[in-house]
Amino acid sequence: MCKRLIVILVLLQIFTAEASSQVPDNDNRLRNIINQKGQATVTIPRPGAKEMAILSKSISISSATDKNIEIVLSPVTAEWFIVRKYDYEILENDDAKGIITASGMEEAKGWDKYPTYTQYDSIMQSFATLYPSLCDIDTIGTSIYGKLVLVLKISDNPLADEDEPEVFYLNICSKIIIQTAG
Image (tube, rainbow, N blue to C red; front, top):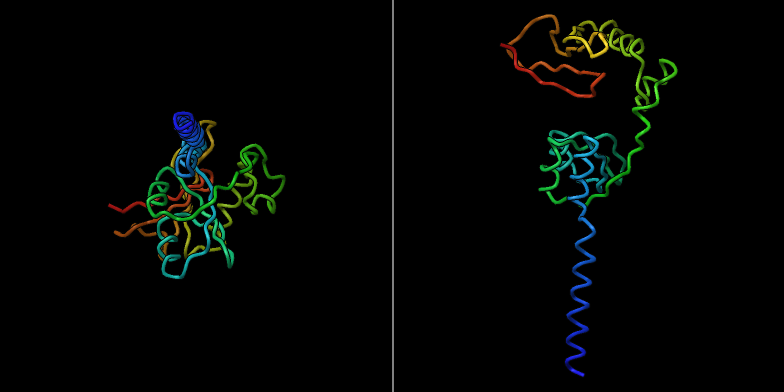
């Protein structure tokens, strides 16, 4: 009877270990999503003001409510986030964004669909027109389709090349590039 109980306990332990090893933990699942899609969206309980300030300087917060904040993680920010041991939930993203193009300017400004090139150009030009003392538009080359890739320099003195960080927002790539002049 004792041998049978030992055998059952050993088999139970083996099956339990095997079953748990087939389910990746949340951190590995997060890494896999980022490796496959280039980014992942997670939600965490809203932290206090001090921690919120740290988060907002280090990662991209896409929305916040009284209870939760939604964060978009990239390969650059994922490990920093994981090391901090937040209690998080991975949100499943709808991959349709890259497929659906906005039908008009108002829809394009909602940022839930990609603008056409004409809409993108109009939006970028409107920033420079509406905020000439803060924005200057330039190009950094052409896309694989021969279209200009526009950058918007946002600064307190956008027409001057100052020896301080300059921020360029690449709308088409959804990235922010920080460069130091010089």
